[in-house]
Image 1 (tube, rainbow, N blue to C red):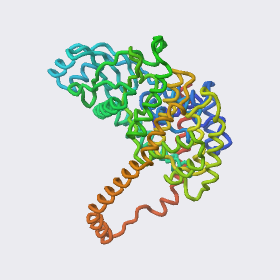
Image 2: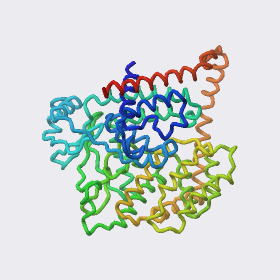
Image 3: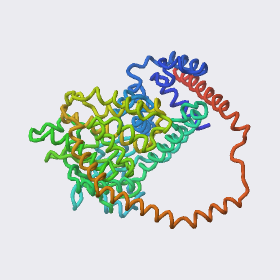
Image 4: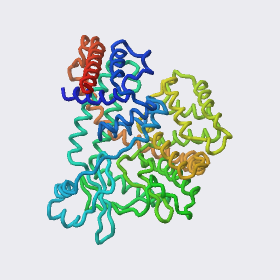
Amino acid sequence: MSDYLRLMRAGTALARHDVILPAAYQSRLPLPARVAGGVMRIFGGGARGRPGERLARALEKLGPAYIKLGQFLATRPDVFGSQVTIDLSRLKDKLPPFSAKLARAALVEEFGLDEANRLFPDLGPPLAAASLAQVHKMETSGGTRAVKILRPGIEGQLTRELSAMKRAARTIEGVSMESRRLRPVAFTETIAAAMMRETDLRLEAGGADEMRELSETSGYFQVPRVDWDRTGRRVLTTDWVDGIPLTHPDALANPAIDRVALANDITRGFLTHAIEHGVFHADMHEGNIIITPEGKVALVDFGIIGRIGLTERRFLAEILWGFLKRDYMRIAEVHFEAGYVPSTQSVGDFAQALRSIGEPVHGKPAEDVSMGRVILQLFDYTQTFGMEMRPELVLLQKTMVQVEGVARAIHPGHNIWNASEPVVEAWVRRSFGPEGAARLIRGNLHEIANRLKRLPDVMDRFEASLDAPATPTTSPRRERFAPWWGWFGLTVILALIAYAGITDLI
């Protein structure tokens, strides 16, 4: 019942902003949904703006869990389209700060009274407050520190809201065969796991430390050092970064800053981390980028770290290299080799679709050549060719669009293709040359050896499963009537949302 009440609250907010069951989709909806949508629009208040803008405003009003949901939805252009995801990427993650008294209580709970007083003797006022945590500045004998503290009770609040979201996803997947290709339940589970990981700041500290090591090697970014003595599950302390956030109007006011080099560093640093190491900062918006007095790029807030394996890294590099060289057939073959496009589809037809994406931008001025647009159009073909979307690639795509937007904000003439070419070319040459072949053979031999070591245990479990009696997993009757129950549940939810919206306005 509590899940349904929360869904009613969310549905009412979405209805007021004409997001849920909008008029533009009337012809595609079943009769109960059309009726519910019409009733909600009558009491919707005349929301204005594009659908993505209306959705972003509604999510901001619903609070922390839904703000985070919006940030994840911005990674799914294959579901919502490129314009909606671009609007969602601008969603504002700002909330009023909680009191200094509650901040001190959180420190005492994490470290104990004596240790909290010793480690945090003079905690300054909050300087920034977001949906999950806020940041304080503090002076220590070892230098200035940034102290990030989780909001009180945020874990319980997220758990309750995520329970409602999971119920909504199960209902949608139960009534819509088409939705199952997009796997809303699996996507919601991924969102829930990622959100709850962000409430353990020890994990963020580990990601920050890993990114610092990579950045010291590549030289493109500066990352603050973690103060491990002052870090726990609900508190993260790092060195303070001197500089101006890229969101500030004066961030690039220093005439000594080389904007061209700075934009290139953003692009090449991200691609070096992703392609060379398979690890990248997955939330590279302007608020998490600080321009230092020396004109360098510093990264903060490592709550979301993206990871891709060697197969995905080769996939990314070959796609970028293919578009750079206009080799559309090779790009198509890479998609089929990786299993992202079903073998029942035509390689030639997919290459033809890729040509329609790449050729319009060939030879155009830098400001008209967008890697983000190319990738978003590539994702638009997911339904046409039955592509199965991988969460790690979606997160990578979202970050690439963010990176391009940041680089263009620094230098409007930035050409992300030209900036990425040296990184991609170097990796392709190493990976497909003698060194890469030797590394691939060594990796395959290592995997074979590991599988042989596990073989006796696997055979024992297999023999045990043959001896165990078979048990039915699902009742045929339940399987036959599941879609009807799903439609009934969806109709009840929509009716309750419409009723809640009307009574709330009255």
